[in-house]
Amino acid sequence: MRITFLGAAGTVTGSKYLLDHRDRHVLIDCGLFQGYKQLRLHNRDPFPLPVQDLAAIVLTHAHLDHSGYLPVLVRDGYRGPIYATEATCELVKILLLDSGRLQEEEAAFANRHGFSKHSPALPLYTEQDAEQTLKLLHPIEWHQRVEIVPGLSVLLRGAGHILGAGTVEVLADGVTLVCSGDLGRPDDPLMFAPETIEQTDYLLVESTYGDRRHPDEDPQRQLADVINRTALRHGITLVPSFAVGRAQLLMYHLYRLKQQHAIPDLPIYLNSPMATDVTRLYQRFCSEHRLSPDNCEGMCRGTHFVRSIDESIELERLRTPAVIIAASGMATGGRVLHHLKSLAPNPLNTLLMPGFQAGGTRGAQIVAGAPSVRIHGQEVPIRADVIPMQTLSAHADADEIMQWLRGFKRPPKHTFVVHGEPNASDVLRRRISLELGWPVSVPEYRDSVDLAAVDKTPGKA
Image (cartoon, rainbow, N blue to C red; front, side):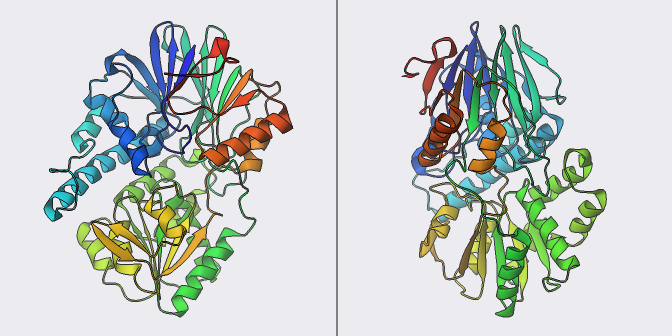
């Protein structure tokens, strides 16, 4: 078996791992590159083989950095199956349609206002491309081994992180390869802990937080402090949020804070039709997360769901204390951009930035203290109070990743550290080598490795 690292190598975006076995090609994850321009340009790179030669695609979970490139392959001729858990399939239906629609809208907006360097600005793919992609989704059950091509099967186990997220175990000719996907936290309020895996021959492990530990601070206390301080100065708290997982976690914490009278009874707006639809899936797949039906109902009852564009525009006129949760989580697109334009210049307001902000994104620029960010061709000053918040992360930190790795009863023959910025990946590599004594390396973009000769130096594909 040969593996080629087509993404999430030296970065946290663009997850794609191409497996070659007996002249059959299988892709594990199919994500968009996000963040720095030089990374986003990879979304326009030609795929390294004719897409018709791909036999199957398997998804670890639905986030766009793991699924968002699918419509490009389908547009270019891919017609094979896309395997994932049922919850992931349902989430992908929501995310891809929204992504295609958003890209069309942003291209049209750029063309109307003339701020694109390209004439005309074109979307990477369209909503119609996304609709074609959804026809190829094949839900598979947890813990059920499925042969997806002759001689190669997969099995999915819970990874925590978000609804439907799984680790993928590939079995081919008696050789096993495990891809961790994005690992969740053992004590996450929403999701169950990642399942322990006892053995594999080869391992791909994520390293988003491979060089740091999450703060011990209570997230509800931190949220209450930020919201109360902002409300006292009659400001608005804006929270850029991922529609899947993060938005629901925020809703739950805010619901609990109101129950405890720890924050004022101010309005909480979820301005993301996609997050609204995702929240319904958390209610539908109640057995796959920790929240009780009562908590699901309560957090929904305490949130104003903003669906229409007119309602979203009306929110921009808001001048009384409130909390606005809006996608996207790294401020790369979506309705949060319009709120940033109206709220960020006002020092009475707060920009609460939860979780990891990938390099090159507006979210990362804001957290780094940029005096302004460019939105829709204009420089928008950042005068609002900026509060980074790491306690809401859905990713395991370095210690939690190491805890999961210690669940293996025997060392893998080789471990590849992926899905991390260079320092995070290298720090985790050193820990795995020193603390566990495992053979381990950090692949680079487009490195290609024959697993039967993994101790040789990886070469470029």
